[in-house]
Structures are given as structure tokens and as C-alpha cells.
Image: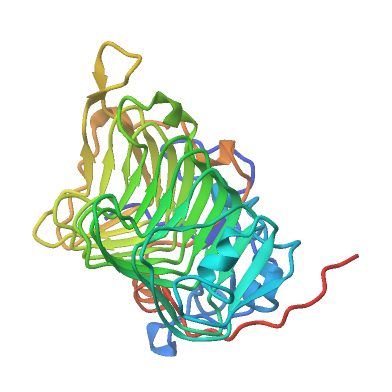
Amino acid sequence: MGNSVGHRKHRNSFPHYPTPPSYINAAQPHLPNPISAPPSHGQFAAGMLSLPYSHVDSSLRALAAQAEGFGRCAIGGLHGPLYHVTTLADDGPGSLRYGCRRKEPLWIVFEVSGTIHLSSYLNVSSYKTIDGRGQRIKLTGKGLRLKECEHVIICNLELEGGRGPDVDGIQIKPNSKHIWIDRCSLRDFDDGLIDITRESTDITISRCHFSQHDKTMLIGADSSHTGDRCIRVTIHHCFFDGTRQRHPRVRFAKVHLYNNYTRNWGIYAVCASVESQIYSQCNIYEAGQKKVAFKYLSEKAGDKEAEASGHIWSEGDLFISGTQAGLMRESMGGPAFHPSQQYTTWTVAPPTEDLKQLLHHCTGWQCVARPPDQPLPA
């Protein structure tokens, strides 16, 4: 069993090892609780345990610039008008594709529920929010492509059944930045569920549910793409539900994982390959038949002579059901990369049964009303 730490949020002080750092629950100073564990799951600390971001459902554009971690600057279509999706057609006026290709900032909402069958990748341009709250939208056939764009927020969608070579649920490449993927359900694509490659960076993935899939999430293209050393990704409060591998697999990038629940993987949970730096904090790893959570793969960077694997630092993680961490000895000491070098606050709870149940029931697409669109402050 890993170390246990309190429900808290890191502020500025760099940790001293091996003692875990000190946190306070300060990320959301006022925490309403519309999404919380059922009462039977028990109380936590002073109140019911809840996922981060409960405040963002108070008004439509409250999502903007609220991500924790590396995607914290993503504003999406904050300064644009509402665009209403009124048809489930793949293209044409009133379609999702029609809004996503527009060049101006847009906050995209849905007036219909149902399945949109994509005949090709749906390209999302800069300064867009795709906000599925208030409806139930499923994208099938192909996925979303975020290519050379910035400031994109994707919230409360389902993506399922993408077919064809190199078809990912959400493909982020090349040179995209300031991205937030929140509260989405992804399953059953022919390639990856989320791929982040080719110098795309400053990305947060939160409250998502991943299932029925093999190669779940790739960060960093291949060992020849040394430009991917710039990639920075935060993944938190996600549920990797029996997916086979890549939760994530990382090359070159800096990745902060916290308060995720990964269970019943088929090969490994997390893989560190060439020069990657992964900080795994207060996650729950629950093995099925394959017991080792962390895997290391050596590759030769395109500008280096010798092969190298990556690094994983584990702090406060919980390993249950016979899970073996599999940490390399060199990762037992203090890390070269710590998230507090990159951002000052994030919400983290101890890896308890309450957290496990919360992530099991409250990640992915949720039946959430669309908040009212209130005017921006002058």
C-alpha cells in the first residue's frame, strides 16, 4: 500500500523527500457539491468527497481558464458568441463540424441529443469550446483532430467506435497548446483514445472515463521526434476502466498524474519511455491478472547515441489487489521534475475507497444541465 496523504492542495513549497509534501484544500475556495459520491460511500474530511470543478457548472463560461495543471490557461471560446448545434448531420449549417471550422472564437452548445456519425476527422480550430452539457452527444466513425490550434475546451461528450488506420478519439498534433479535455467518455477506437504528439503541450485531461480499448493514451510521437521534449500534460481524476495499456505511455514529456483510478490493465498501467518524466501522485492502481503497474521501455532519442528509458516518481499512490509498483531503483529518490515547479495549486485527495467509488461513478459524460450564459464582467 502506498503512502496516504490528506485532502489538500499544493502551494509553492517544494517537497522534501521521502516525506510527502504538505497541501491544503485551497484550489476552490467555495466548493458547492453538485457532483459527489452517493451518501453510502461515506463522508470525507469536513464534508462529502467531490470531484474538482464543481463551481464551473454555475454559469456557462465558468469553465474558461479553470483547468488545473498544465492546461490551466485554456479559455476556449470565452470571448466569442454562442454557436448552437441544431442538427446531428455530419456537415452543413447548424452542424458541429460547421461551427468547429469557423475561425472566430465560439462557445459551441447543443440543442439536440443523439449520435453524430463523422465520415472524416472533425478538425477543431482555435478558441473553441465544445460544451456538451445539457444534452447527450456521441461522436462515432472518426474522432476530433486538434491540429495547430490553441485554446480549445472539450467538455461532456461521448466518443465511441472510431474506425480506420490512425483514427484516434481525440488527436492533438502538431503544435497545439492550451487544451482542456474534461468529463468525456471514450471507448473503442481503432488506434488511440487520446494521442498528444508533435510538440503539442500545456494540456489537461480531467474527469474522463476510458474503457473497451487497447492503446489508450500516447504522449510523445516516437523516439525520433525530439521536439516533443516540450510536451507537458496533466491527467487527473480519470478512470481507466479495464483498458489494456497506455495510461499513458510517454516519450520525452513531463506528465503529472494524480487521483486517477486505473484497474485491470492487460499489459501495464503507465509506461515511461525515452527521457519521459512522470510524477504519479495519490493514484489508485488495482491489478487484474497483470500485476505490475509501471513499465519502462528504452529507446534511443534521435539526437543521442545511447538508449534511455524514462523516469517515474510515485508519491502517495495506492497499490491494491496484489499490484506491484515495478519502480526502478533510480526513481526511489527525489524527482528532477515536480509539478510545483510548473504550477502552484492542484486538488489532491488521499487514494481511499471513497475516491475509488467517486471516480467509478462520476467520471465521463454526465447528465448535467447546461448552465445559464451570463454576461462577462466589463
